[in-house]
Image 1 (spheres, rainbow, N blue to C red):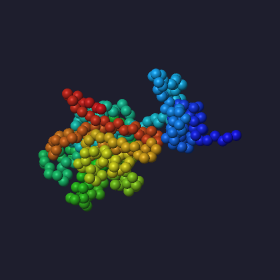
Image 2 (cartoon, helix red, strand yellow; image 1 turned 60 degrees about the horizontal axis):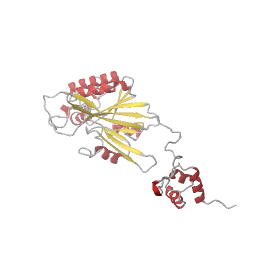
Image 3 (tube, helix red, strand yellow; image 1 turned 180 degrees about the vertical axis):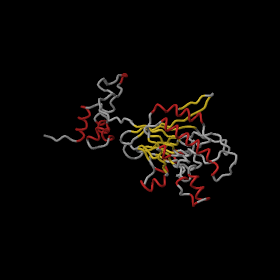
Image 4 (cartoon, rainbow, N blue to C red; image 1 turned 135 degrees about the horizontal axis):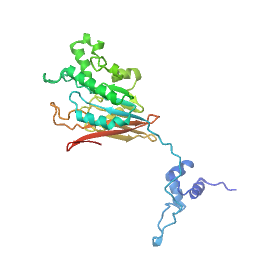
Length: 326
């Protein structure tokens, strides 16, 4: 009995399974789909839908584009909301109120404040107008916002990632009064500051977090940074793409007040990596830079049990007296 060659095996298998893909046939016969195609072309049975003379076509009634297959569909069962760059007291109250109204029915599992919630204008290193808001006023409004946010999303776990504006407090103390910089009463979690401990909001300083966990803060497979931690990112045009090139991993940032997304397909099997830049909730026309390309926005993220996720990066527009959330 003559042993069947691989060419004959491929041909016979194809004739018995004409709707199966060439790639699948190649995998089953330990060869490439291109080789399968060459075998079938030599046998005169490929392509499947050749036109004959007289514009008559082969009978393709046995071919179907729908297959009975079993899919392992991932269900997103956890939700995160991300608010960035409010810069209280230079926030936009109508934008914040609209976002809270839009999201209150989502019942998120996590709420993340992605930095620069407080502006700390009077202790910045820039020239300042002494008649502007003082630090105590900023902290009072900040506590008010966080308290209301906790009331809205009381069942969620709340995280607050330090931004460069929150870091102004530490920098000011280090330069002006280093001896007082370690006082518990002067930390943001203290009662007369933002009272984060009483609100049960975990404050995350990225450097200290990395010293403990050897990586930035993340939920599932998505890292979170404010954005100032990435050097040389101040005047970047393609923020999301540049962030992805710097980190080479899934990451979501604020800091730039821009809404951008960039996703790449890696060389690995089904390997997608992306970076997302979240918009702000502050005044778009501050005194120091009234003309800019900032955008209002926030993000929601949905997670599966294995940590994979979907980011919905919302942009917000004011138009004809209405607030539109996209």
